[in-house]
Image 1 (spheres, helix red, strand yellow):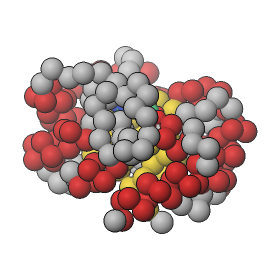
Image 2 (cartoon, protein in one colour; image 1 turned 30 degrees about the horizontal axis):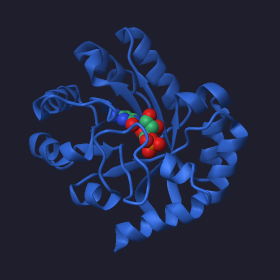
Image 3 (cartoon, rainbow, N blue to C red; image 1 turned 120 degrees about the vertical axis):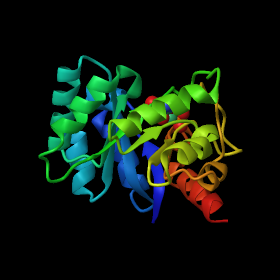
Image 4 (cartoon, protein in one colour; image 1 turned 120 degrees about the horizontal axis):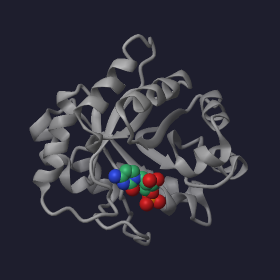
Length: 220
Ligand code: C5P
């Protein structure tokens, strides 16, 4: 079982997500629940994944006033998620309060900061490093960034600072709307702790086969 691959369940119903989870469970340990699925299926989907003894990456990318984000973070933690996201550009106070909200939880989820979405162009890598530094300063556990920035982020924030890369495309998959893309193997070689892959697996004719193909590429 590979512990780096996260499959993004970007579908619009509990039933579709359930089918994917059941097909992929023999190969995948972590599932990402984003806004589309969460709004469609509700927190029950988190419970379903946890019951299957799989981990949940709750990617709702919180960005609001500090009090609201802190309360949403605590609510997410109560659902027993493995990790969750908030936008680093929400600022110091928002990040600090979110982290503080988790202080008394015995099962603290990993708190990850979203830097710049991988569907966007970045003018300079410094933009990402600045956000990574801010996330680290406010005691977040890591960040989400493109694989092209992993090496610089690890250098700037230390090797224990978690890096999650979306925008991953195997050479045989189409790019969709992602711009700063990298192959799974390159991303892991660059030092990613986790890679997020959605459509190349979830929209494949045979999702289990696509996942297996990716895992094989990671091993080889
Ligand atoms: O289908 P695809 O592999 O492009 O899915 C990528 C997933 O990663 C999506 O669920 C998207 O919301 C998420 N993501 C991203 N860029 C970020 C953070 C998350 O593409 N910076």
